[in-house]
Structures are given as C-alpha cells and as structure tokens.
Amino acid sequence: MPGEQVFVQSATGVDLTLNIAGPGHRSYAFIIDWHIRLLLAGAWLLLTGFFLKLSLNARSHDALLSLLPAAVIYFLYHPILEVAMRGRTPGKRMAGLMLVDRGGGTAGTTALLIRNLFRLVDCMPALYVVGLVSCFFTAQRVRIGDMAAGTLLVLDDAAAEQSLTRLEALAARSRLPLDVLELLDQIIDRWPDLEPNNRLLIARSLLARMHPGGDAGQWSHLTGSELRARLLELRDGAATATGAGSGDV
Amino acid sequence: MSESTDMRAWIVARAGAWRSMVQSITDLRQRRRATVEESLNAVEAYRGLARDLATSRRLAPASRTTAGLEALYSQLHALIGRKPRGGGAALLALLRTDIPSAAHLLRSRIAGMACLMALGAIAGWWLISAYPTLIGLVASEEMIDHVERGHLWTEGIINITPSSILSVRILANNIAVSVFAFCAGIFLAIGTFYLVALNGLMLGGVFAFVHQHGLAAALFTFIIAHGPVELSVICVAGAAGVALGESIARPISGTRRDSFQACAHEVAPLLLLCAALLVGCGFIEGFISPDPAFPMASRITIGSCYWLLMWALLSGRLFAPPGAAQARRRRLNSS
Image (tube, rainbow over all chains, first blue to last red; front, side):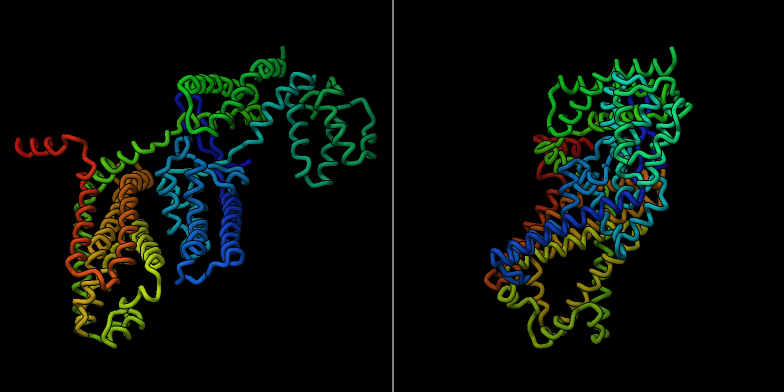
C-alpha cells in the first residue's frame, strides 16, 4: 500500500483518506494507455490504408478519413476518455487509479480539460520529464496539469471493497478471531503474487501456529496447492482452530 | 465480551448495509442521472458509512475491514459530490457568464498583448527593411524563393493540397500555438511574452519582405479574411497566459498553487472559445483566403464580420439575457 495519504474533511466530520498514486503508478497507467491509443490509431490506419485502400498521403482527400481519425485517437484519447469516464481511462482502471478533485470529489469537465491542456508543458522537453520531475518533488505527487486543474491521482482500492463483503460472509461462518481471519484472507488473496518459497514458508508457519499442539513438521511435506487448500479450509470455517489467538499469529 | 467478538458481531450486523451500498454505488456510478429518492438514500448511506468507518478505525485501525470501508467511503463521497453534466444550460452559462467575465478580467492584458504584438511587428518591419538578408530568420527557404520569383507562397496552394486538409492542418497548428501561448505563462509569463512578440516580429518581417518585392497588397488580400481573428485569438490566449504567470509570481489569495489553480479555472473558458474561433479561422484560411475567386470586398466583409462575432462573444452581448441591454443603458444614464 502507498505511504502517502491525503486527509480531506467531509461533511460528516469523519475525514476521508485518499491514497496518493506515486510516479510508478502513474507511469504504469500511462504506459498502458499509450499502448492502447497507439494500437487503436495503428489499427485504424491499417484498416483504412490496407483494407479500404485509402491513401495515407497527408495531402490527399483521403487523409480526412485515414490520417485525421488516427491523429484524433492518438492525441485526444486522454481528454475524451477522462471526461467520458469521469476521471478514469482504461489504463488508470487497470492500474487501479482514478482522478479526483482536491476535496476527494469527482473531477469536473473543466478541471479534466485543463489537466490535459497542460500536457504540453508536462511532456517537455521529451518523455514527460517535466511532469515526472514535478511528481517526484511535489507533496501530493502531482504534475503541472494536476496543479492547474486541482486534481489528484489516487488509488481506487476495489480489492479492499470486495474483501469487505467477503469478510462479512467469513465472519458469520468461521470461529477464528477476526484478525486471524483477515490475515488468512489476505494471504489467500495474494497467494498468486507471493514468491513461491515465501508463500510456502508463510503458510507452514501460519498453520503451525494455528495448531499449537500438533507436530510442527507435519506441514513440511505438503505442496503449495495442499497448503493453500488447508488455508482455505481454515478461512472458510470447515476446520476450526480454537485457541489460536491473534497474538500467536 | 472481547473486542474481537464485538467487532465480529458488528461486522455481521452491518454487512447487509455494506453489501447494498456496494451494489448501489456500482449502479449509480454507471448512470448519468439519479432520482431524488436515490440521491437521498445515497446521502443517508454516506452518513451511516461515516459512522461505521469511525467505529472500524477505533476498533481495528489496520484491518481489511477498515480499508474496505475507507474505499467505499471515498467512492460514495466522490459520487455524492459529483456535479451534474450541464448540457445546454452549461453551454449557455459558459457563453453568457464565464467567457465574458474572463474576458473582462483580462481586458487590460489583452490590450497589452496586442501592443506587444504590434511592437513586435514594427520591430520586424524595421529589421527586415534595414537588413533584408535577415529574412531567413523569420521565413522559410521555400517562402523566400516564392517571393523572389514574384509570387506569394500561398498562390495555387489549393491546387496542391485540398482545402479541407489545408484547413485541418492550419487549425491544428493555430490551436497548438494558442495553447502553447497560454501554457507558457507558467514560466512567469516570459514564455508567453516571447511567443507573442515573436509572432509579431514574424508578421512585420514577412510584410516588409513582401513589400520589397511588391507583394504586400497580395499578402494583405490573403490574410484579411482570417488574420484579424487569428491574431486577436493569439493575443487573448497570451493574455490568459500572462494572468497565469502573474498568479504564480503574485498570488492574490492562498498559496501560489491555490492562486495558479484558481486562475487556470477562471481563464480556461476563454481557451475553449479561442479553440472554437481558430477552427473557423482554419476553414476560412483553407477555403476562402487562397481562393482567387473571392474579391477583396467579400474578404473584408468576412474578416470584419468574424472579428465582430468574436467581440460579441467575448463581451457577452451575443448571448446576453433579455433586458440586459436596457439595464446597461439605464446604468449608463444614471451614472
């Protein structure tokens, strides 16, 4: 999870916490978007140039149907999609990011257009150097366009939202302490992303602590998928581990 | 009972409400409009969620439950604060209020930019008149060749490039110049001054050069239909850029960042108008200006009418509410 957060006062008196996206998240989303718009523009050129046999010469009439739409896709991808998707683009969505205003609200159309206008400055002299430098040196990791528009790029934690509803079902079924249940849920959730050796170690250590009376070596012969199955059983309440306190784990 | 048991019971009790909230947030996010009842329900859910989040932060600050509630709370916060898409009413407000007020705010700077451009043009004229060999600084080799052979580079251009393509290229270039004149304002307006003065210098220099070859009248004929608005728009965008630079150098309220943001939002509507006007200029420059079939009188009429339209849009007179003219007259009489 990110280290940087912004706290916004809300009308309810309970502050809103926004997790700021750093330069890495930004670059990741931008690279995805860049590939998408490049592919779309390229696909259009391919369609018009090779299949519809339109001329790709910039001085011919055909350029209105071949080159112009490709240029529009490439250059207006960000402003059009950000406005249409209310602060998101496919790249931002895949990277789990969204644009909000400084109050945590949905960014308005004017703000999004201003943000995109200043790409001209942010991309100078090349490869978004100005924008990246600005992200590294500003407190809220914003580029010049964000400063002008008053927008923030924040993490859109959809996984946490999903785990909330899942946890409720687990809490109702399982007799495990809640913090243990959360830990189990998190390990299972992140299982594919963890290093194979590390996840085996974590799973064995967790299972050994959950069964304090048993033989600690009994888990060492289990394979990764077997260990995961045991963890799933524990989480879903099929097996109970009474007496395993949160402090033990 | 332990705190963990309390928390479990609380999660189980509240889970139904959270589930329905997740569902309604997903629904509302995908829709453009919500009914009054749905909106009120969302506000009520927001209040409930704030209470739940406060409880969760107290009982289990670093838990996934809290993280999930934080995510839900921020989504609902954004959803409730979402401004409606304005449509026609927003466009009318833009034309009736936002653009005229921004133009009024920038009027002295627009005049200043016009003076700077005029000074640049005079300097360019003098420079090329005194040192004709310096024309290479402000004109391309191709342009110089054409003029030295006794005709403008614009002659016969529509025989080479279709007007539609020419228009698109010209308008894209002009919009880029105007946007750059605006954005360059963040360098304490120095970039904007440079750009506007350079445009003036090039205009004066090219006019001096074509005058030396007896083609000044032909160039005037070419630019009179689109030039007045095109040059005015560069001045307006430059003025917006200067305001931006000034907001950073001399912040009026709050921090420099606040001032910069407020100024960008205030002058942004003008940029939209500039872009729209430049689209018109591009079409005039692509279809009318290079076409010898259009006589001088019609070019002057088009140029002056288009400039008047720009002025009417900037002053807000074109979309003024009914009765605004009488109110203005009464105000003038009373003063």
